[in-house]
Each structure stands twice: as structure tokens, then as C-alpha cells.
Length: 82
Image (cartoon, rainbow, N blue to C red; front, side, top):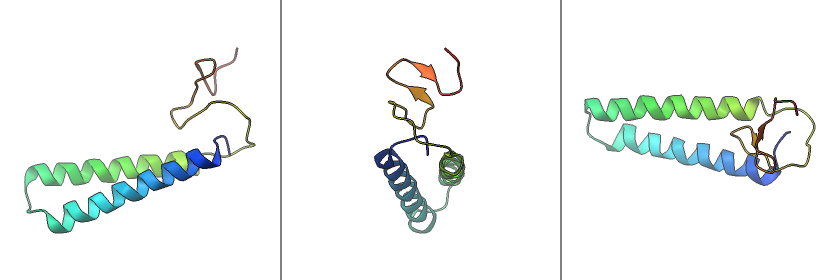
């Protein structure tokens, strides 16, 4: 895991919140073209975030990384070499 447990939990919470918003949008909002676009956007965002979590593998290395892939201590991407 490349990220802190707290960041991992925050990301899962964020995905859960989007899923709950999706449920409300789908089943408690009148049908419209705008609603359908919002639903599709939420689905794609949830899928992308799930992929980020699924690919978060490897040994934990202390650093100030988040799910954007940036080490905020030195401003480098995870895969960049110094």
C-alpha cells in the first residue's frame, strides 16, 4: 500500500458517499437528460476511484503522497525519478 491507512479509508468513504448520491439521484430524482448525465458521471468517477484503490499495491513508504500520485513533500510524481 503506497498511501496511509487514513487516506485509504478517506478514499473508501468518498466512494461510499458518491454511491449514496448515485442511489438518490437514480431513484429519487425525476428523469431528465441532465440527471442521466450526472448519473453517468458519478458511475465513471466511482469506477475510476475504485481502480485507483485496486492499483494501490506495494510496500508502504512513508511520504506525503495522496491519491493524485504527487509527493507533496517534494512535488514529484510517484513514478518520477529524481
